[in-house]
Structures are given as C-alpha cells and as structure tokens.
Image (tube, rainbow, N blue to C red):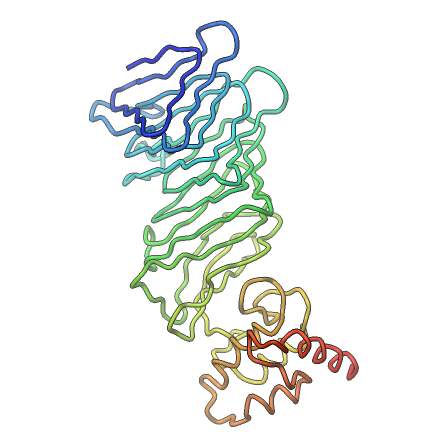
Length: 363
C-alpha cells in the first residue's frame, strides 16, 4: 500500500501495519517541506510477507524531508527502510524481532533493519537516538555513508543475538548513553552483542548488564565481544555487575583491540586469582578514593574506589582462602582503612574522610 501525503501524523492508539512487498509512505512528492511524525503511543509495524525475496527488499519504505518518532516502530521478521533529507532523532522505540541473522556475504538474507539514505540537502545529516530513545533487538541497522554519523544519547539494547550497526561514518556513544547487554546463557544467541562495523566507534556512557531471570552464570563463564570488534574511548560506568544471591560478578574486560568481554569472577577478587584476601584489599587501599576499574578495587562499577567497594570485598572475605584466618577488621587496620562504618551509616562520610587523611599521612 502507498500513502501519499505532505504531512502524515500517526497519533495515539493509531497503528499502521504493513505486510506487502514495497509498501510505501511517501510524503516527498509535493512542494515544500514534508513530515512523517509518529507520536506517543502511535505504532508502526512491519511484518514479514512470504513474497519477499532478495536483499534490500523492504516491506515498508518511509520517504520524507523530516521524520520524527516518539512512538514505537516494530519490525517483525521484516526489513524497514527510512529515507530522509534532514537529520532525525528517535525519541521513541525502534524494536526488531528477527529469527534470521545470517551473514549477507553467504547469500542468505540478513534482515535490513534501517536504511537512512540519499540525503542531498543542508548541513551535516545525523541519525540520533535521543535521550528518551531506545533501539532494541537483534539484526542489522545500516546507515549509509551519505549520512554523516550516528549518535546515541539513549539506550541501545541487543537482546538475544547480534545487533549490528554498519556505517562509513562516525559512531559516538555519548556520556548519557546506555548499552544494555541481555544475558540469558553462555551460547551464541543467548546473550546480546553490539557489533559496530565500517568505523571505530567512540564509547562513552554506561554498560548495563541485564541478567535474564532464572539464569545464573558460573565461575569462568565468558561472554565474548559483547561490544566490538574495536573501539576508542571507554565506558564511564558499569551497572548490575554483581550476580544476585551469589559471590559472583560479571566483569567487563577490555581486550587489546578495544572489544569488551564479560567474564564471571568472584566479587572482590581484584587480581583475578580466585581468592578474596589481603592482596585484593591492598589493591583497593592503594587506590582508595581514586578513579579506577575492577583491577583497582572498584567492584560496584562507578569507576571510583570507595566504601561501597570495601563492603563488597568484606562480604566475600577469605573466599577460597580458609588457611588465612586474618579478621577483616585487622586487615582493614593493616592497610590504613580502619573504622569504616557500614553503608548507610550517618557517620559514613566523616569516617571515609578520616580514613583517607590517615592513609595519606602514612605515605
């Protein structure tokens, strides 16, 4: 079906469903600026049609000077193509539900999720996932080289497979962005992976780990290249690393090429030797009140070593080290961190400041 209109508003509780080959929303055929606006609660769905064949055959194409989404775009086993002449920002949800993600190089269809193409007017043209925007699912999001870049300020959430972003221009994850990695198992396809090809992306913001209920990782489990294959910059925080009800944590580990793995280690084990003891507490004390990562004693993911990290280590003290009977209180005193109160105590800030002053005085 083809929609021809200069301004098309898809409002609350309105759903447009396309399951035909070459379905089109085209607002560019009339003079002046044209708009496609998907409002809050507006829902645009593209679904697979058995007549679809070949690569780059969308079941729905949207062409407009301007495109705006604060609603939901859902692609169900179906390619979607968007062509605009100006930058556009996704402040809603773009969700992909696909079971086929074969490599197009093999001749098997890799679902084409988003094609932002052929922009010919105006200043630099960017596709932005805005602060309230979410891009979720698994498949291929292709941003042509005619666009000048992709900026993420919101949430990118690979679900149960690879979410591939391919572009010939820059990809930037800003400080407000979140990459949420879903983890439901250790096998390929059971955890999310964000793969960015065609350019080395600049990382920033938060890497969030979302364990699927009822899945509990075991020590040594590896979830490889959850972000990659190469990157510049770095995430500024990690959230939900600790595995509830266990002594384990999913630790982001950056490889030499810039990709990120998740590896299951004991919480509090700063040196990855499988034991939580004075060696780990000494590492933490050496970086006390400093910026740092896991191997500097930051076990909570805020990239700063403080009292919250002490208590993560305390709760696993002498794990796998029964022949080292040193009490935790004595160990704290030995590294100059005696007297730190429990988290939430009214005296916590005062005590932390005192411990810091004491440790500095001993150096």
